[in-house]
Image (spheres, helix red, strand yellow):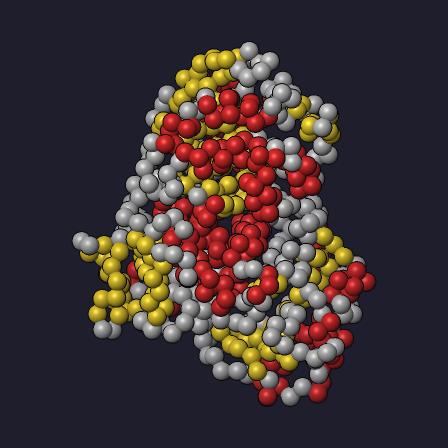
Amino acid sequence: MNTPSLAWQDGLPFSPQYGDIYFSRESGIAETRHVFLQQNHLAERWRALQPGEYFVIGETGFGTGLNFLCAWQLWQEVAPASARLHFVSTELHPIAPDDLRRALDLWPDQAGLSAQFLAQYGALAPGWHRMTFAEGRVVLTLLVGDARTTLPRLDARVDAWFLDGFAPAKNPQMWDAELLQAVARCSASHATFATFTCAGIVRRGLEAAGFKVEKVPGYGQKREMLRGQLAGAGHLATAVPDREAIVIGGGLAGCASAQALAGRGWRVTLIERHPTVAAEASGNHQGILYARLMPKMGPLSELTLAGYQHALRMLGQLLPQGDDSWRQCGLLQLAFDEREAARLQGILDLTLPQALLHGVSRNEASTLAGVELPFGGLMFPGSGWVSPPALCRVLAEQPGITLVTEQEVSAIEHGNAGWEVRGAAGPIATAPVVIVACANHSRRFAQTAHLPLRSIRGQVTHLPATLQSRAVRTVLCTEGYVAPARHRIHTTGATYGNLEETLELRAEDHRQNLDMLSQLSPELYAAVGGDTLAVEYLDGRAACRCNVVDYLPLVGAVSAESPGLYVNTGHGSRGLITAMLAGEALAATLTGEPAPLPMELMQAMAPGRFLPAKTV
C-alpha cells in the first residue's frame, strides 16, 4: 500500500489526490475544538462520567491525527482519572511518519502528546491497529483501509462521531448513504455527531440513517455546519460483570489476558501450577517474532499481521531495549527453495509498507545478517527476539494481578456466587469470570473438554556462542530459525514433532536443528562448531505447543451454557505474535469496548465454531 505524497502549501499539509486541505488555514486546533469537541458537548459529558466508565469516539478520516490529539488533551483535563477514552478512526491513506511528524510540529503546545503518539505510529499496513496511551486511559484503534469496507466490520458502540473526511464535493465516497448507515449501525443509543460540512447530500444521508440533524454556526469562513443525535434505538450499553476474574495458566496467553483486564481496573487472580510463570511452552530462552504471512490474506494471515504489529508496540512499552529481555535486531525470512521463494514474492506483491517488510537479495541479506547466506528473501526490520519468561513476568506484575503459584486446578464449577476454581485441597478462588488459558491442560475441564486442541512437541537447541558466531546480527529463518546470542547462547530450532507430550531432550532432534542451521548458513554452522559438535552433549529445551486443527487460536466465550467462562489458548507456534492481541480482544469482549479486530475475525477465533450443531 502506498502512502500519499503530501504537498505543502504555505507550510500546511495539502492532499493533491483530493485537492483539499487537512485542516483550517486559520487554526486547525480551534476548528477541531469548535466543530467536534464543542458540538458533541464532550467536556460536559466527560465530567459526568463515573469512575471506571469508558467513552467511545468514532471518526471518519484520521488524517494528521489532530482531532485525536485534541480529544486526548481535553480528556486529560476533565474526565475522571479511572475512565477510559476509546478513539476509533478510519484512514485509507495513512500519512508517512516523517510527513506526520512535520504536520504535528505545527502544534508545539501538543508536543508531549504528539511524541507519545508518533512513538507508536510507524508504518501502518492495512488492517486494525490498536495503540494505548496514558497508562491505558486513552486507546486509539486505527482502521487502515476504505471506510466503506472497514466500518461495516467494526464491532463498537460509538458515543460521539467526528465526521471529518475531505469535502463531499472532492471525496463523495466518504459521505455516501451506505457508509452513513454503517455509522448508525455502530452507534450507541445516545450517539451524537458533528461535521464541518452542511452539504445537502450529507444532511439527507444522516437523516436517512436515523439521525436528527440541525445546522449550527460553523468555524471561520464556514457559515454553517451540521450536528445531531441518533433518533433510533442504537446499541444499548453492554452489561459488564463485577470487575473480577480468575485466569488459569501463567503462560503468555494467561499473563496477557490478566494484564489486559488489570489495565482496565479489574482484580485478577492468576493461577499457575508451577512455582513461576512461563514454566512450559512460554519458557524458552529466546522466542522470535516470526510473522509468517501468506500471499492471500485470509483470517490467519490477517491475525498474524495485526498481532505482529501489536506485539512490537507492546514490547516497546513493556520491555526496555537495554535490559537484554528483547532485541529489535530484524528478522530475515530466507527463500530456501522455489516454493518458499514463490510465497515470499507473493507477500511482496501485497505492497505492504517497506518499513514493515521488504525484499533483499542474497548479498543484501548477507550484509544485514553479518554472515554469509545462501539465499535472499524478506527483511522484517522491526522484528527480532524476546525472552518469553521476561515478558510473562512483566505482564503478570501489573497492578491489580494476584499471582497464585503451585496450585493445580482440577475443576471449575458454576454456582450462585459465580465460578469456583478448585484444586485437590478444595476451593482456590471464586469470581464471576474465569479465563482458561492453560494450553493443552484446558482439555481437563468438563466445560472445555470438547475443544480440538493438539499437543505438538518441539525442541530447541542451545549453542554456545563463539567469537565468530557473534557476528550474526539478525534472526534468520528458513523452516527453522537461529537467533543472535543472548547470554552467550544461540537458540536454534524448533523441531515440529508428532502429537505427543514427552519432554526429554533427544540427540536426534538436536541433529535435526543442526542440519537446518547448516542449510540456513554454512558459515554460521561452522562458526558454532559444525560437524565437531557432539549432539549428545548439547543443551536445549523441549516443550509442547498447543494448537488447533484450523491453526486459529481459541479466544472468547466457551458457550452460552457456561456464562462467564472464556478461553485464550491454542496459539501454537505464533504465541509471541498473537497472544497479547488475543488478550486485548478478550478484555474488549468482556467490557463491551470496541474490538481490536474485525467482527468476522473475532468470530473466526470464537470457541463456538467447534460446538456441535444443534438439531431443530
